[in-house]
Image 1 (cartoon, rainbow, N blue to C red):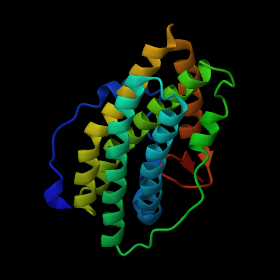
Image 2 (cartoon, helix red, strand yellow; image 1 turned 45 degrees about the horizontal axis):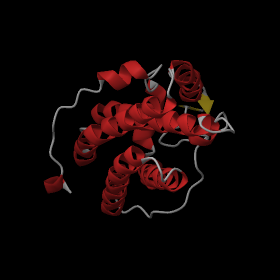
Image 3 (cartoon, rainbow, N blue to C red; image 1 turned 180 degrees about the horizontal axis):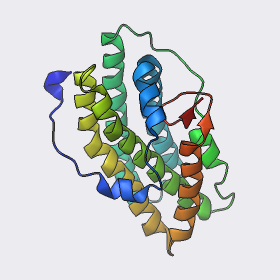
Amino acid sequence: MAEKVAEKSVDISPIQQFLYCGTPKAWLDHAVEELETLLIDHAHCEKKAAATAVKLMFRYPERLDLLKKLSQLIREEVLHFEQVLEFIEQQGIKYRAIKPSRYAASLHQYVAKDEPQRFIDGLIIGGIIEARSCERFHALVPYLKDSHPELAKYYRFLLKSESRHFMDYIDLAKQYAGSDIDERLDFFLQKEQELIESPDPLFRFHSGVPV
C-alpha cells in the first residue's frame, strides 16, 4: 500500500467552513481504541458511496453531467473500498457485515417525496456525507500518525478525492436546482450537526458522540 499512496497537502478549509461543526474529540479518542470497527465500517461506507452514486445514475439517466461526474466517483469509491480491505487484511481483521450507523438514514428521512426536490435533496445529502468523511479523515491523522503511520498516510491521501466528491455533489445540486439551495443546505447541515454532536450508542465512522 505504501508505494501506492503519495502524500500531498490538501486544503480542506472550505469543507470545515461548510460543515456546522467539527468531529468531537470524544469520537476521535474512541476511534483509536476501536480501530477494527472503524476500518470495517469505513470499507462499508466506501461501498455504499459507490452504490448510492450508481442508483442516482440509473434514476436520472437523462442528466449527462451527473452521469459523467458520478461515473468517476464510483470508480474512485470502489478503488478506496479495495484499499481499505487491504488495510483490514494487514491488521488481521475479518471483514464482515455490521449494523449501519443512524447517520445516513437519519438524513434521508427528510428527503422530499416529490421531484425535482427529491433529486436535489439527494445530491445535497451526498455532498454533506462526503464533506464529513473528508473532515473525519483529516481529524484522524494526528491521532493515528504514531500508532498507525501507514493508515494516517492513507487518510491524508484520501482528502483530495473526498473533497472533490463533496464539491461534485454540491455543484450538481446548484446546477439542477434552478434556484437557490441555501435554505435546504442549511436545513440538512443543522440535522447533520445534531447527529454528530449528540450521544450515539453505536460507534461507526459517521456516528455521534460515543456513550
